[in-house]
Image (cartoon, rainbow, N blue to C red):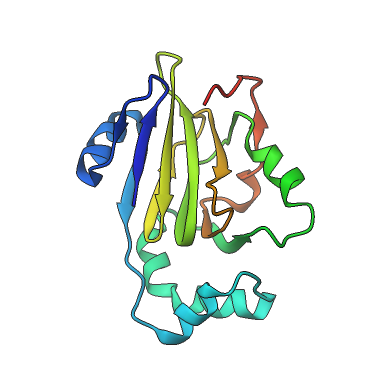
Length: 177
C-alpha cells in the first residue's frame, strides 16, 4: 500500500489523494496489477533469482511493461534486493544519498516494498512508500533517494527511457528523513 509521509510528520494513505498530491510535482504514481500467473508468483516469492529466472519474470510481465514504457529506445531489467545479497548495506548506502538523473526514473514494484524520498520545491522533504503493484515515475532532474523498508526486500522492474542515462548524479543535499 502506498503511503506518503512528509518531513513534518503528516501522512497521506489514500491512494487517490497521494496521486493528486504528487501530480503537480511531476511524480506519477499508478498501479499496474500483475497477471494471475502461478509460475510468476512462485518466482517472485523467491528471494534470489538467477539471470534466467529474471528473464522469465520480465517475459511474464511483458504486457504490463509495454503499458509503462513511454519512450522508444530504452530498455528494462529486474533488480532484486534482499538481505542475503553480499554487501547489501554498502550497495544501499549509495542510493540513500540525494541524487538526480538526466532522464526520468521509472520503477514498477513487483514484489516487496521500498521508499522513494524527494526534495520538494520549498526544500522540505517527503517519502513515498511503494509496494507491489505500484509504478512510480520520478521526473528527470528531481532530487531524490531510495531506501528499503524494514522488510529489506524489493523486486522492481527498472524501465530506462535511454539506457545510458540512468547513472546517479549526487547533489550533496542532506536527507533529513
